[in-house]
Image (cartoon, rainbow, N blue to C red; front, top):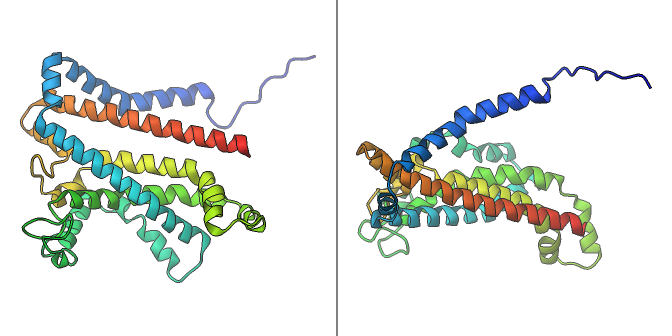
Length: 286
């Protein structure tokens, strides 16, 4: 048989695109991470351990991871409701509400932080009605500003679009005939939701959750105003890293950043593993 030459593609080939991809990722991602790792490597193990286990640093870890996790979980619940409503139903001002979901993307983080502080502080529109004895409120001023709950509110605010925008295509692709078949077989609404809808949407839910969690762990601008930045109480890890840099403690800052990087990578790896497992299990069942 005569040899047939491969037809040239209009688009760049695999070698060229892969080369550009590796070069781009190296400049934007790998080089900064390598510089951080090299700077951390200049520290002795005792200095590194002392820097990352200081009581102030540990308190910032606890606040950052706890508030980020709670905010992401809240967004999973309410984000699913918002995405379902925007995808499945038609109602007045639907496009306006759909556009409002992207406000945390569009707003500069400092602006969103100032806005949240103005709303939830002791003199804000909502915060003025929150007395000091209310759970999570400031014990002397009232309101939610300058409290761990205020940090959680800020991280919930910036994470909502990740859940909604991830779930909308998955809900749109969800075959309504599956729900009708479940109802025909005698399943009630709760059983249909639990056995048909949620298993199908689980990979998308985990993806949105991981994106919201990753964004919250690295958030800075929208949190520093409402947090109050009190050491051991409302100081987040990203602010502590900035404080170390302002004090020219570059090794300490990179050490804390390395811990955050490793912890975030492990959490995302676990979530991606769960996502792969749920998708593989669903395909096996289907």
